[in-house]
Structures are given as C-alpha cells and as structure tokens.
Length: 305
Image 1 (spheres, rainbow, N blue to C red):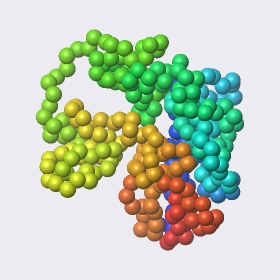
Image 2 (cartoon, rainbow, N blue to C red):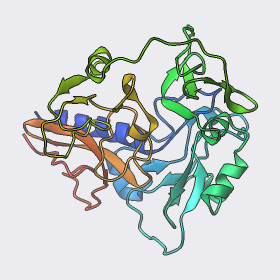
Image 3 (cartoon, one colour):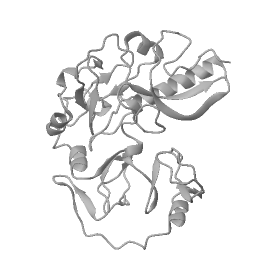
Image 4 (cartoon, one colour):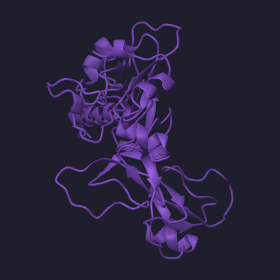
C-alpha cells in the first residue's frame, strides 16, 4: 500500500472513528448527516485537539435554524487537550443520550449548556422521544434507522424515503409518542427454534466455540461446547443473532467499534494498518498525540510502503 493510499485510508478511518466516537445521535425528526458536524482531519486534530473524539453534536440541529430542545448539543471531547482539570465530567445531550465529557476537555458552542450529572441531563430531555423510549425499557436504535417504530419486537413493513432512528420496545409492546413503551396485543409467533437452527437462520455460525460471541468478540472460555458466532455487532438470543445497543454505544477502550458503533468520549475508532494493509477489526483507543507528522492519530505510520 502506498504512502498516499495509506494516508487516505487513515483519514477515512479517522473520520469514521470521529463520527462513531462523537456519539452524534438523532431525534425522531432529524436524520444523521454524514459529516456529523466534525470534519477535522488528522493535522487539525493535532494542532488544536478539537476533533470529535467524543462529541455530543448532531448535524440535524445545525441547519441554520433555531436549536430545538431535543437537538444534540455542539459539545466535543478534545482528543489531544492541552490542559485538563481534576473536577468531575460535564454531561451533554447527544441527540438520543446523555454523555460525559472530561473536565476541561469540552470544545464547541454548547459547552456552557452542560449539566452536572447524568440524572440532571436526563431530566432536561425527558420529553424527547429517545429518552421516553429508553426510560420505559425500550432500545433506541440510532444505528439502525427504519420507517417506523418496532411493534411487538418487529420492524414494521413500511417503506419511506428517509428512514430514521426508532424505538424497539421488545415483545408484547409498542412505542407511544407520549407515554413511551406500552403494552400491546401481539399475534402469537411461531414456536421457538432450537439454538442451532436459530443461529443458522439468522446468519450466525454454529460450532464448538464454548459460548456465544458477544458484539464480534469470540468466546474467551476454553472448552468445546456448541455455541453460535454471530459476527460483528450482534449477540445471540432466543430468536438467534440480533443487533443490540450494547454493541454500538459507549464502546470502551479496546472494544470493537466497526460500523456505526460509538466510542466513549475522548476515544477514537482505529484499525492497525501498515504496509501490508490493515489487521483485525477496528477498536476504540486513545489518540496518539505525539506531534509526529508521519504518524496518524491511531498510531499508524503514514510512511509505510
């Protein structure tokens, strides 16, 4: 891989990492734009430390109009801050959740809008659809937009021009705009399948893995018991392999962050790349802030042949 090709790949990966790390969610009336509000490249991130390693910003609320109460705040966790303090983090609304930004590292127009605790942040956004969904036991699917909220745990067979983040309230429930997840009369589904059949029918691989994979991570136990490998961003449940929020949000250092997964604020999504290409899945990590122009923020050597 040439230097220029690797550099382009690194910048593309960094941008994807910043977008996933920025925690830029969408409310039910705003789509998630590609730039996420943070178009800094590796060079500018080194200079000012203002790249979206963990932003609470959503481009949907920055269209030139007045900021709506449920729009995400323009608040970013600097990747390479020059100064940090010892105080507690501040909390910011990212459009579908409240996220912490370490003391002294916030960058953005809405840093002053911070709340002092997660509870205070949630209380301020209790009337937003994502908060109603999560607060009543549902799962807000910011990573998997659809054309309508799930009913009885199933995506509705709707067709639309612009899918949007929706709520999955699980079996026997539906989402109500005012009340959140409520009971619903659901049709009786087919009988449960055997684990192997459920795994294979939903795209998993059945084998002697000892235990089921979790969000792309293989089982760490040492045995040969039959289990399902669901692949990236999915877990195994009774109905087979399914995508779940824990595979996408608040990914910690060292955890897989492929696709639309979001790293914790202050982390970026990186893949280890060199002259022979990139190895393994992308994982969340802290930025490499060494001022070396030949090294990207993921620590990859841009001069590798």
